[in-house]
Image (cartoon, helix red, strand yellow):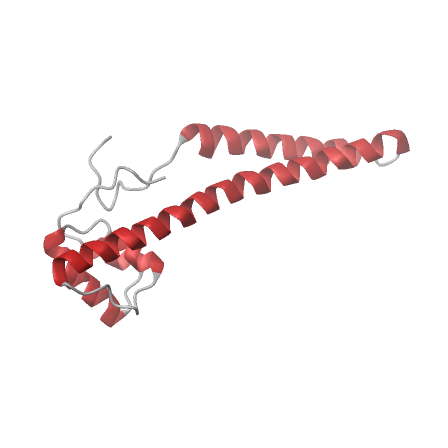
Amino acid sequence: MQEQSYAKHARTVPMYHFVLFGMLLLTLIGSGVNLWKSMGDHQRLYSAALILVMNVCMVFIALFARIFALKAQDRAIRAEENLRHFVLTGKLLDPRLEALQIVALRFAPDAEFVALAQLAADKNMSQDDIKKSIKNWKADNYRV
């Protein structure tokens, strides 16, 4: 994997993000057209409506699969970063930090982590601001 930085840390999976969602979009459009053309034909209307509903369900399944995986990953990152903070300071992370702030802190090396975590809590920094504040980016190659 290429070296990560603020500019190059987003991860895409082409088969998932482009191929699958492209296919889902095309089948959703096609099933909508099929339903539209079936409006006058009562024999085809029921099956066309079912096909459209099934395609909408598939879009939701694909979206929820991604959302649920990211939520599970965020929980794991929160636990890891809380442990890292405890190892470095003997204290848990500041409870004012939100999950997405902690997720952004995972890119900070140990030398910057504690001070940046305190700054993020004190100034209620956004996830993006936290990432921009990191001087020596620590790659995370295991994210989903």
